[in-house]
Structures are given as structure tokens and as C-alpha cells.
Image (tube, rainbow, N blue to C red; front, side):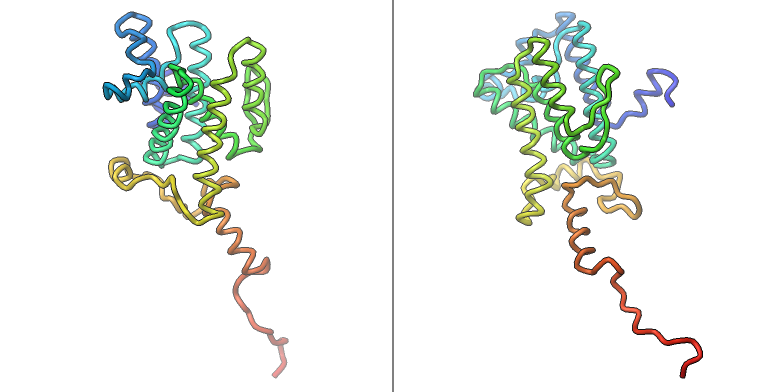
Amino acid sequence: MPQNFGDWFNQLGLVTRASLVASVGLSAACSLNMVGVSSVILTSDAITSLQVWRFVTAALYLGNFSFPWLMTVAMFVTYVKNNEESDFKGKTADMVYMFLLLMGVLSAVSLFLKVYVTSFSFLMALCWIFCKRHPEQDLTLFGFSFRSAVFPWVLVALHLVMGQGLLADVVGIVTGHAYVFFRDVFPVSHNQRWLETPMWLQRQLPQTNPRIASFGPQVHPYDAGFQAAQRSGAQRGGSGSHNWGRGQMLGSS
């Protein structure tokens, strides 16, 4: 168990650490007026002036320093950490590609809706993806435990009670659900993988954990390999695949 912040930070995965540093760094730079908020939010300049960093900064900027900001950062780190330590354990390239896909879709939708910060939708998308893949797991919010299957809706209800707009939550949920469908469900039903991580990214960020584990692989109900194994097992039958023959009684000729 980590004894201090340094131990805790070092135990985080690579993507979680990078996301935390980038998000806190952006908030610090804006809070100290080192960088203007207008330089990190999503505007049409991201396309017209090729300021492509806005697609990333708009998804990682959680606001200036405040108590609500601190709570939001804690939730953000939790959702990134949950994903990285479960379905993306040792699969840095896959997780980075998921980040890029989510940021791209959220940016396109937000530009259309004239929403300048995508971080809250990004947070909800990450929460939805984890909860959809692990519906039976319990998550804690302010000391109360909720099943993952309903946890995103608990967040939506909380935001509604707090008087926050629901647009960011809805956009995040729809985007996260689309990712789960096209990444986990569609390949099984149509045998097509549209969201496979590009090879160039896999070469830059090689897997540190084999995609097919030798024992106890971490899977979720929508995992293509998991469902394929289920179908194969069903075809072989429950008693095993080897034909041991009729057998012969001891002592018989």
C-alpha cells in the first residue's frame, strides 16, 4: 500500500500518470495566468488555423484551481486508472488510440454544438466504457457504493441536482457507448474490426502484456476473444473435447 504521494503516483499506469500531469499542468498554467484559457479550449481555430493541440487540451482542461476542480480531478484519475488497470493493462497503444478516438469524436460534436470544453464529456465517456464492460463491479461515490451498471446514471442525477447542464453527460455517454459497440460488439456480430489500433502506434508503444494471456486473462462480457472462446466451448460440449473411447472393464479379455 502506498505510503505517500510519490509511491501512489509511481504505482499508476503510464497513461494515468501522463493524463494527471497534463490535466493539472493545464489548470496550473491557466490559474497562474501563464497561459490564457482561450488558448486551450476548443474553437474553430483548431481546424482553420491548424491548432490541433486544442483537441487534446480541451479534453484535459478541468478548470482552474478550486475545490470542485479537485473533486473532478480525483474522479478523472479514478476513471482513467480503472480502465488502464483492467481492460488496457499493458496495452498502452490501445488506450492511447481510444483516447484519440474519443477526443476526435467529442471535438467534432462539440464544435457543432458550440461547446468549448470537452473534458466533462471525456470524463463521462471513460466512466461509461468501464462501467459497461464491468457491470457487476461496485464503485464508490462520496462514501456510497453503487453497482457499475447504474453508476453513470447516479452521476447524471447528481449533476442534475447540482444544477449543472446535462449536455456534456449525454454527449459523453453516447460517445462512450459508441466506442464499446464498435470495439467490442460489432467485431463479434459482423467479424469486422473498425477500431483496431494502427500498427504505427503499436510500434511506438509496444504492448507490455500479451494480448492472449497464458492464465487468467482479464476479459469482459463484450470481449471478442472471450465470446469466441465461449462459442468454441459450446460446440465442443461441456464434457471435454477428447474422445476417450468406450473403455474396458478391468480383468476382461
